[in-house]
Amino acid sequence: MAILMIFIVMFAFMFIGMDIFVSMAVAGSSYLIATGNGPLSMISNNMVNGMSNISLLAIPFFILVGELMNVSGMTDKMLKFSLFFIGKFKGGLAHACIVVNAIFSLVSGSGPADAAAISPILIPKMKEEGYPEDFAAACNAAGAVLGPVIPPGIPMVFLALITNLSIGRLFLGAMIPGILMALCMHFIILLKVPKFDLKPHEATTNWKAFCEVLRESWLALLAPVIIIVGVLTGMATVTEIAMVATFYIMFIGFFVYRNLTLKGMFIAFKNTAIFSASIMALFAVAGIFSYMIAVEGLGAQLIALIEQYNMSPTMFLFFCNVLFIILGMIMDANPAMLIFGPLLLPIATKLGIDPTHFGTVMICNLMIGLITPPVGALLFLETKISGLPFEKVTKASIPFVVSLLVAQAITTYVPWTVTYLPNLVFGVGG
Picture: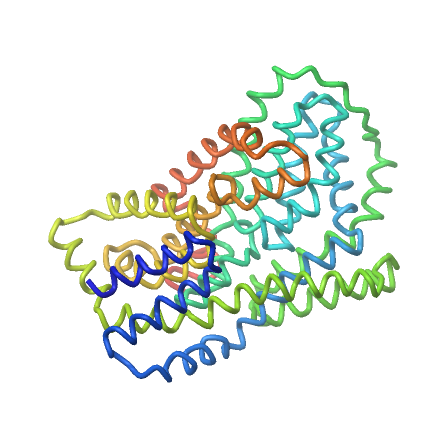
């Protein structure tokens, strides 16, 4: 009963507009005061311990990589490279929206970062070619969902740190599901585009033009290669890889492209500090919730409940997906993972579900929440960029949400889509 009251307190504070980490901290403190199950001094101790893991540095460095690419103009070069391949076929620009988001995902790890970098460029282009404004905004919002899914997704680093899962296995495990999500969105575009009266897209696709666009963009495209090769080879930790990628972007921005300014650096570091601080605050309060769950034996109670009703892995995954869809609609993914990840992962493992598979299912599901109301961060961002009403962008996003749910169902019930690449590279159970 005590743990139930704590969750009620937390969601009540969130409902009235308090920051999530404040709501969690107040709820945790209330638990200790009400039950006397621990000294209040453990709050400060856990907050310090929660942020003392050196691996946490990977998160701000991956965020900084995306920010530096935005302010240095490298995002534009990657976009130009992707647009080269759309040719003159109808709907090519909408398909390019998904492709360029997938490519940029390899360095940003964040959906909002993808949208903020790409949408201001693509939405006006799509309007010029005759795409409906709401479809253009919805397409960009849906494409940006790939940011946290295709490695190196920041939520994967977050989940790995709070559950002790392998970051490398999570990165590789999310690769095929990310491609599935992209293919399902391409299918929606194929269905929608014939209904639009689009202007023909003029594109030069000869060998000379390809060499020119490759010459301008190959150094920017090398950034995701550095990250992926580093993860696959294990030559460095994920934190070290993130640092190398950051210094690589800074070097070519300053000395090769020469369009990374001190003002741009300040903007990138400021945005990184703000975003990173919100994540670190969650890690600071994570220990309080972990302590409550352990003291109350909530994990053991859930396992006993599942055994009592003889729940199968298939049914467990179904209920988890429903839970994550609801959570994605009402709260951000990081606190949802923080609260329920360490609680549900041991149960999934006990039922014989591969831990990497379950973690990837959780991440992919929660990322769909980025384009579902009422808390869909990408919907609000695209509303601001496009100038359209929130309701209009939300309605236009529904077909993309359906396509992502189809991809989620495949990922959930075909474990091979997640486990194949990690097992290939690291070995079974490696």
